[in-house]
Length: 322
Length: 280
Image 1 (cartoon, rainbow over the protein chains, first blue to last red):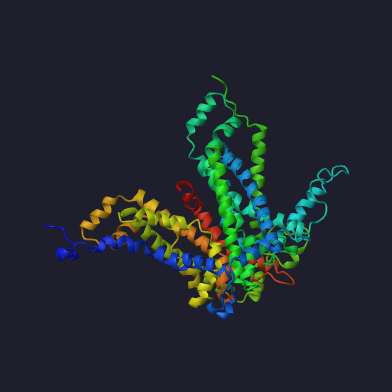
Image 2 (spheres, each protein chain N blue to C red):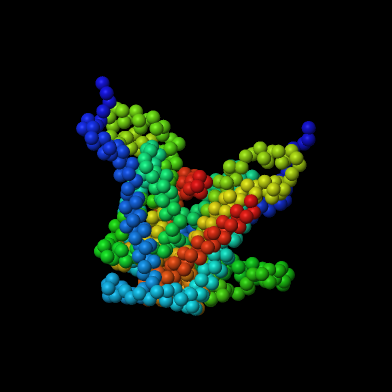
C-alpha cells in the first residue's frame, strides 16, 4: 500500500502543480500580509504622496494639488512646529533619562537583595505600564490640582516643615501651592507622568537581562575580593549593555511619539502657551482640527526621519564602545 | 571559619527605604483614584483631601451616567472590541506562527523578515491616511475600523513561532499528516491545544493593549454612543466645574478589569510583554 493523498493520483503531467499542502503555509500566513497591505503599507504610501500636496478632504481626490516640498519647507519654518518639537525633546529627555537612571539600580537591587518580595515590588512598579493612560492622566490632573491637589499638599507640607522656627527644606520645596497649569510647570508634570508610567517597564527589561548573567561571574569576583559596588560597575553594567541599547531605543522611539499623556493632561489643547504640545499632537491638530492633511503628513514624515536618525545615532554610540 | 556577618548595612537600609517609598509613589495615584471614586466633589475639594474610602460611589456613578449617558454602552463596546481583536489575533497569529515554525517553503525567511520589519514603522505615520481609508470604506464610527486592522500582529506571529518551534516536535505534525489529517486539521486539532500557555499570554497582552488604545478610536470614532471607554473618559474633560468624583469613578471602572487581570497573571503577562525583548 502506498500512502497517497486524495489529490496525488492526478496525471503525471500536472506534477509541477502545487499540492494543497504546498500552498497551505502561504494561506496560513496570508492574513497578516493582506491586512498589512490594506491598513499598513497603502496608508504609508498614500501619506508620502499626500505630503507633497495641498488638499481639502471635502473636495475628494480630485481636489489634490501638487506643491512639491512646499509642505516640508512650511513645516520646518513654522514656529509652532518648532515649539512642539522643542517640547517633544524636552519631555523625551526629562522623562526618558530618569527612567533608566532609576530602573537600572532598581533592577539590580531587586535582583540582588530582594528574594521573596521581588515579584511583588517589581509588580508594583510595573502596574502603571498596563493601565489606561487616559484614566491615569485624568487622575493626575486632580492630584496636581492647584488648590486641593495631593501633590501640592505633600510638597508644601515638606516645604513648610518647621524645626524651631526654621524651615530646613524651604530652599528645595515650595511653601505655597504651585499652579501646575502654568507653562513653566506643565512639562514637568507631563514628564513625571511619563516617568511614572514607564519606569517599571524598563525595570522589568533590565531585570530580565540581569537574570541571564551567569552567577559564576559574581562568585569568581567575590573570591577575587571585589566589592558589590565593583561587581556592579565591572560585571553588571557591561553585561547589561545590549539591554540598555534595546531599552534606550524603545524609549527614544516611544518618547518622540508622545501623544496620549500630554493630550489628556492638557485637555487636547497643548496647555497655556502650548507648553505641553508635542510634535505628534501638532500633527493630530493639523490634520483633524485644521483639516490640513498635506501639511500634517509632512509633519509625520519629518518626525519619522528624526526618530530614524536618533535611533541610528543611538545604534552607533552603543556599537562604538564595544 | 569566619563568622558570617548577618548585620544589614545602613546603606542597604537606605536602599530598602527608597524602594518602599518609590512603591508608595507608584501606588498612590491608584489609591487616590479609588478613594476619590467614593467621595463627593465637595469632599475631594476639601483640604486635606480624603485619604480613606467614603460612601458616594453610587452617586458618582449616577453623575457619570448623567455626563456620559452611553457609559455602559461604551464599556460594552470596549469589551466587544478587545475580545474580538484578541480572538482574531490568537487565531491568525498562531496560524501564521504554525506555518513559520512547521513548514519549509520558498521565501519563508524573507517573508518573516518583512513581518519583523513592519514593527519598526511608527504607527503615527499611518494615522492620517488610515483615518481617510476608514472614511472611504464607510467604516467610520464602526467597531470594525478598530478590529480589522489589528486582527493580526507581527509581535503575535513572532511570539507564536518561537513557542511552536520549541514546544512542538515536527514529527508530531508529520505523524498526523501520514494518518490523513488535513493541514488545517493538524493546526486546529494538534497544535492549537498544545500551545494554550502561549495563547493565554498573547491574549492577555492583546486584550490590555486594545482596551487601553486611545489614539486609534480617537481618529475613527466620532459618535459618543460608539466611544470606547478611554474616549468616553476623555469626554468628561470640559469647561466649567470638573466632576472629579465622576471622573475618578469612571477611571476606576476602566482600570479595574486590567488590575484584576494583572493580579491573576502578573508573571505571565510580564513574561509575554518582554518575550520580544529578550529573544529579539
